[in-house]
Image (cartoon, rainbow, N blue to C red; front, side):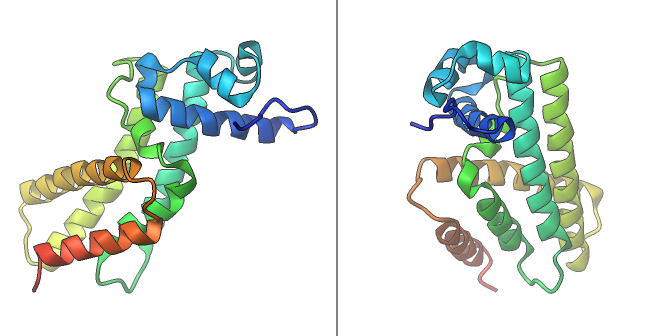
Length: 198
Protein backbone atom coordinates (compact mmCIF):
# COMPACT_ATOMS: atom_id res chain seq x y z
CA UNK A 1 0.00 0.00 0.00
CA UNK A 2 1.20 3.50 -0.86
CA UNK A 3 1.21 5.41 2.42
CA UNK A 4 0.46 8.94 1.27
CA UNK A 5 -0.34 10.08 4.80
CA UNK A 6 3.12 9.61 6.25
CA UNK A 7 4.39 12.59 8.24
CA UNK A 8 7.06 14.67 6.61
CA UNK A 9 5.68 14.29 3.07
CA UNK A 10 5.42 17.62 1.27
CA UNK A 11 1.89 18.65 0.31
CA UNK A 12 2.59 18.64 -3.44
CA UNK A 13 4.07 15.16 -3.24
CA UNK A 14 1.19 13.89 -1.12
CA UNK A 15 -1.34 15.34 -3.56
CA UNK A 16 0.34 13.48 -6.42
CA UNK A 17 0.27 10.26 -4.39
CA UNK A 18 -3.45 10.69 -3.76
CA UNK A 19 -4.11 11.52 -7.43
CA UNK A 20 -2.21 8.40 -8.52
CA UNK A 21 -4.32 6.18 -6.27
CA UNK A 22 -7.53 8.00 -7.24
CA UNK A 23 -6.83 7.57 -10.95
CA UNK A 24 -6.59 3.82 -10.51
CA UNK A 25 -9.76 3.75 -8.42
CA UNK A 26 -11.66 5.97 -10.85
CA UNK A 27 -10.31 4.13 -13.87
CA UNK A 28 -11.38 0.81 -12.38
CA UNK A 29 -14.78 1.71 -10.94
CA UNK A 30 -15.75 4.88 -12.80
CA UNK A 31 -16.94 8.21 -11.45
CA UNK A 32 -20.32 6.77 -10.47
CA UNK A 33 -18.94 4.06 -8.17
CA UNK A 34 -15.54 5.32 -7.01
CA UNK A 35 -15.35 5.95 -3.28
CA UNK A 36 -13.36 8.66 -1.53
CA UNK A 37 -13.37 6.41 1.54
CA UNK A 38 -11.63 3.65 -0.44
CA UNK A 39 -9.16 6.11 -1.96
CA UNK A 40 -8.32 7.46 1.50
CA UNK A 41 -7.94 3.95 2.90
CA UNK A 42 -5.58 2.92 0.09
CA UNK A 43 -3.59 6.12 0.56
CA UNK A 44 -3.32 5.56 4.30
CA UNK A 45 -4.92 8.91 5.11
CA UNK A 46 -8.25 10.23 6.35
CA UNK A 47 -11.18 11.16 4.12
CA UNK A 48 -11.22 14.72 5.57
CA UNK A 49 -7.61 15.16 4.48
CA UNK A 50 -8.62 14.49 0.87
CA UNK A 51 -11.39 17.08 1.20
CA UNK A 52 -8.87 19.45 2.76
CA UNK A 53 -6.63 19.13 -0.29
CA UNK A 54 -9.21 18.95 -3.08
CA UNK A 55 -12.32 20.54 -1.59
CA UNK A 56 -14.73 17.77 -2.54
CA UNK A 57 -15.09 14.44 -4.32
CA UNK A 58 -15.60 16.34 -7.59
CA UNK A 59 -12.53 18.45 -6.84
CA UNK A 60 -10.47 15.27 -6.60
CA UNK A 61 -11.92 13.98 -9.85
CA UNK A 62 -11.16 17.28 -11.57
CA UNK A 63 -7.55 17.08 -10.37
CA UNK A 64 -7.35 13.55 -11.81
CA UNK A 65 -8.92 14.67 -15.10
CA UNK A 66 -6.46 17.53 -15.46
CA UNK A 67 -3.55 15.23 -14.70
CA UNK A 68 -4.51 12.58 -17.27
CA UNK A 69 -5.77 15.12 -19.80
CA UNK A 70 -2.55 17.11 -19.79
CA UNK A 71 -0.53 13.89 -19.93
CA UNK A 72 -2.40 12.54 -22.96
CA UNK A 73 -2.63 15.81 -24.89
CA UNK A 74 1.09 16.45 -24.43
CA UNK A 75 2.01 12.94 -25.57
CA UNK A 76 -0.26 12.90 -28.62
CA UNK A 77 0.66 16.43 -29.61
CA UNK A 78 4.37 15.59 -29.42
CA UNK A 79 3.85 12.53 -31.65
CA UNK A 80 1.79 14.61 -34.09
CA UNK A 81 4.50 17.21 -34.50
CA UNK A 82 7.34 14.69 -34.78
CA UNK A 83 8.79 14.82 -38.28
CA UNK A 84 10.37 12.17 -40.47
CA UNK A 85 8.15 9.26 -39.46
CA UNK A 86 6.63 6.92 -42.02
CA UNK A 87 4.26 5.34 -39.51
CA UNK A 88 2.37 8.05 -37.70
CA UNK A 89 -0.20 5.73 -36.09
CA UNK A 90 2.45 3.58 -34.42
CA UNK A 91 4.39 6.66 -33.31
CA UNK A 92 1.25 8.10 -31.73
CA UNK A 93 0.38 4.88 -29.93
CA UNK A 94 3.97 4.51 -28.76
CA UNK A 95 3.91 8.04 -27.33
CA UNK A 96 0.68 7.26 -25.48
CA UNK A 97 2.05 3.99 -24.09
CA UNK A 98 5.21 5.68 -22.84
CA UNK A 99 3.32 8.59 -21.30
CA UNK A 100 0.72 6.54 -19.44
CA UNK A 101 2.87 3.57 -18.42
CA UNK A 102 2.99 4.81 -14.80
CA UNK A 103 -0.70 5.74 -15.09
CA UNK A 104 -2.37 2.90 -17.00
CA UNK A 105 -5.91 4.06 -16.19
CA UNK A 106 -5.49 7.53 -17.71
CA UNK A 107 -7.56 6.81 -20.80
CA UNK A 108 -10.34 5.16 -18.75
CA UNK A 109 -10.59 8.20 -16.47
CA UNK A 110 -10.86 10.63 -19.39
CA UNK A 111 -13.31 8.47 -21.35
CA UNK A 112 -15.34 7.31 -18.35
CA UNK A 113 -18.91 6.56 -19.54
CA UNK A 114 -20.27 7.19 -16.03
CA UNK A 115 -19.32 10.87 -15.95
CA UNK A 116 -22.20 13.26 -15.25
CA UNK A 117 -23.83 14.63 -18.43
CA UNK A 118 -23.47 18.26 -17.36
CA UNK A 119 -21.33 20.33 -15.03
CA UNK A 120 -17.69 21.13 -14.38
CA UNK A 121 -16.43 17.54 -14.59
CA UNK A 122 -18.26 16.95 -17.88
CA UNK A 123 -16.90 20.22 -19.29
CA UNK A 124 -13.33 19.40 -18.26
CA UNK A 125 -13.51 15.94 -19.80
CA UNK A 126 -14.99 17.32 -23.02
CA UNK A 127 -12.26 19.95 -23.19
CA UNK A 128 -9.54 17.29 -23.24
CA UNK A 129 -11.49 14.90 -25.46
CA UNK A 130 -12.04 17.70 -27.97
CA UNK A 131 -8.35 18.56 -27.98
CA UNK A 132 -7.37 14.93 -28.55
CA UNK A 133 -10.03 14.52 -31.25
CA UNK A 134 -8.70 17.65 -32.96
CA UNK A 135 -5.15 16.31 -32.97
CA UNK A 136 -6.44 12.98 -34.29
CA UNK A 137 -8.48 14.73 -36.99
CA UNK A 138 -5.40 16.62 -38.12
CA UNK A 139 -3.45 13.37 -38.41
CA UNK A 140 -6.28 11.67 -40.29
CA UNK A 141 -6.49 14.59 -42.71
CA UNK A 142 -2.75 14.50 -43.37
CA UNK A 143 -2.81 10.75 -43.97
CA UNK A 144 -5.75 10.81 -46.37
CA UNK A 145 -4.58 13.95 -48.16
CA UNK A 146 -1.19 12.35 -48.86
CA UNK A 147 -3.07 9.38 -50.33
CA UNK A 148 -5.12 11.69 -52.56
CA UNK A 149 -8.40 11.40 -50.64
CA UNK A 150 -10.10 14.72 -50.02
CA UNK A 151 -13.67 13.82 -49.00
CA UNK A 152 -14.31 15.50 -45.61
CA UNK A 153 -16.57 12.63 -44.58
CA UNK A 154 -13.72 10.18 -45.19
CA UNK A 155 -11.57 12.29 -42.88
CA UNK A 156 -14.26 12.41 -40.20
CA UNK A 157 -14.88 8.66 -40.58
CA UNK A 158 -11.20 7.76 -40.18
CA UNK A 159 -10.87 9.98 -37.11
CA UNK A 160 -13.96 8.33 -35.60
CA UNK A 161 -12.44 4.89 -36.17
CA UNK A 162 -9.10 6.04 -34.73
CA UNK A 163 -10.65 7.36 -31.51
CA UNK A 164 -12.48 4.10 -30.84
CA UNK A 165 -9.47 2.00 -31.83
CA UNK A 166 -7.20 3.79 -29.34
CA UNK A 167 -9.79 3.31 -26.60
CA UNK A 168 -9.97 -0.42 -27.40
CA UNK A 169 -6.18 -0.70 -27.37
CA UNK A 170 -5.89 1.07 -24.01
CA UNK A 171 -8.57 -1.11 -22.43
CA UNK A 172 -6.86 -4.25 -23.71
CA UNK A 173 -3.59 -3.04 -22.19
CA UNK A 174 -5.23 -2.59 -18.79
CA UNK A 175 -6.30 -6.23 -18.97
CA UNK A 176 -2.71 -7.26 -19.82
CA UNK A 177 -0.57 -5.34 -17.30
CA UNK A 178 2.47 -7.52 -18.01
CA UNK A 179 2.81 -5.87 -21.41
CA UNK A 180 5.40 -3.07 -21.47
CA UNK A 181 5.11 0.04 -23.66
CA UNK A 182 7.70 -1.52 -26.00
CA UNK A 183 5.66 -4.74 -26.14
CA UNK A 184 2.52 -2.80 -27.00
CA UNK A 185 4.25 -0.69 -29.63
CA UNK A 186 5.66 -3.79 -31.32
CA UNK A 187 2.27 -5.52 -31.17
CA UNK A 188 0.48 -2.54 -32.72
CA UNK A 189 3.13 -2.29 -35.43
CA UNK A 190 2.63 -5.96 -36.30
CA UNK A 191 -1.16 -5.66 -36.40
CA UNK A 192 -1.15 -2.50 -38.50
CA UNK A 193 1.43 -3.99 -40.86
CA UNK A 194 -0.72 -7.10 -41.31
CA UNK A 195 -3.75 -4.95 -42.08
CA UNK A 196 -1.81 -3.08 -44.76
CA UNK A 197 0.88 -5.49 -46.07
CA UNK A 198 1.70 -3.24 -49.02
